[in-house]
Image 1 (cartoon, rainbow, N blue to C red):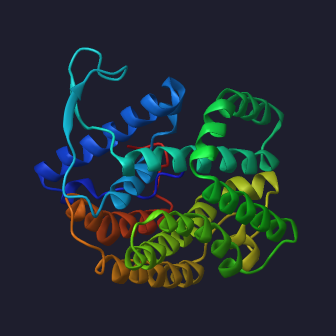
Image 2 (cartoon, helix red, strand yellow):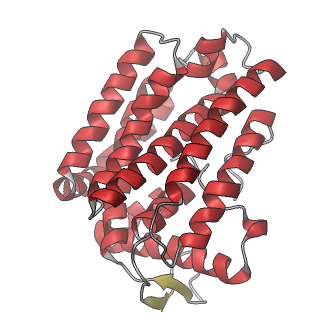
Length: 288
């Protein structure tokens, strides 16, 4: 979806990096088994983080070696499908489907045609995912509708708009088994969702200014040319740091598991580094 939630690779140990790749490839394999080949194109770092977070209470996973279209000759080590990875596959498809529908209003004719084609191809898989997680599907559609209303009314509040998106990710916490984990995951996901929304708005400032699309950051600070002043950057950094600290505080209450060190890297190092790059204008969404 966005790609902002990823580890800081240079700070991962070799073992951790290899372990992260087993989660990435494991989710890809789970998506294919659960929803077919095309669903693999939904795979990204954000959903891999979500799969590891949902698996945080699990002691370990079984590993296997598989060939894939990316590596047809050399088998890759991956984490076999677990209930948490299967749940993440369901939630990933629902999130992607509704986000793509939501994005249609901001695109040109050609982009809308491509999006409609993708939606048609994914429709059977989406219906299956919705049956598997009906409550989550309802939360996503409702909060996106409320967010769209705010955007159509040119809301001047970043807190108001980012809250609606954050609530979408926070809804994932309802899938946790214990009440304690539900509260902890809610805080982590809410504040990461808030950061993602603000970072995406900053990242899209110039594009939205050219297209005349709504942008929460542009509306809040009356930005017309898509450029951030140093003063605005400092204010945005303050609000991003607040959410980063809240997510980190909640993470400390989460049970330890096989993914803990990688999740810690993402929360303490990865997201803050990308936040700094986005604000500095040096972030490239397409880089890996």
